[in-house]
Image (tube, rainbow, N blue to C red):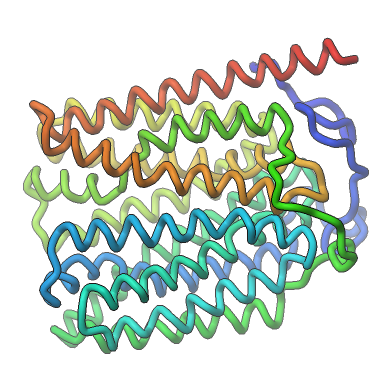
Length: 423
């Protein structure tokens, strides 16, 4: 199928530093059923669920809320862009630090910061204060993201990583699907009470902390400190993967453009939250299924498939002139995310040495996060300036995703050739 087919365990792949297969979660490998998800990974799935339930109940309401405080479209763009940039920059040192101090302390700190900060949105009185709260919330996300993904990697055997990351992403998107629905129901019963809704976001945050405190533990091997630095220290295959991720991320414009296109095609404003629910629910289902495929195929093959599906979906959107054609393409975008996300993380883990998983996920998240700003600017410029705004925006996304899919396969072949030559 592809050049980097899986070799027998425990031989390393694609430049990975060989490591002995160890039993995750302190349970002998013979006790846990093959392919099962460890209890700690299931607990991390619930933390993702509750956090996204809380976050996504607020996020769709922020544009109108900021405008009600006297903000402009520029303020809204600045708030979102700066908050995501903060999260991206923090991920790298956090991931590297977790290689030294352990994963759980930083996971707890990151989730705890967001849980406490997010409800403060109920007390803001200006767009500037919204910016500070949103940036602090994303700062917490930046602290926890790379250590959490590294912890998942620590807890499972290499052949089960796709399934584990698929479980995490599925729970994440399930929370993202239910959050807007919960907000919509609350505001139908209590119209105009957005600030009370923001306060209630504290409850899922507290549940998140309770789950981490009770059920999430570093495996014993992580208890011993290892020497690590924030210097890159990445292998050639890792740098090549980051280059592919950068190309794809440049085209991965905000999903807000999908909602904007749905509205332009006549979807009533009252039904836009249902579109968001459909996208998130589809991502959840696709992530759950595709994680297993990453273990059966190779993460690289599935990643290329996901990005190619992304390209096909956006190509369809660039041509769709009616909602009846555009909405299925939007659901296909969600399927593409569900395919690619577990495969990306499984491939990052596969290419990194055991002592550097945190740093590897930090670099991956940094590149993806930093590309979000130019991606948004490119999409916004094409939307406003192109002869057919949405068509040109979506066509650019399709082209860059297709290029990224080809590159990730080509770099896999190049890595396989290098590995053979080195033997």
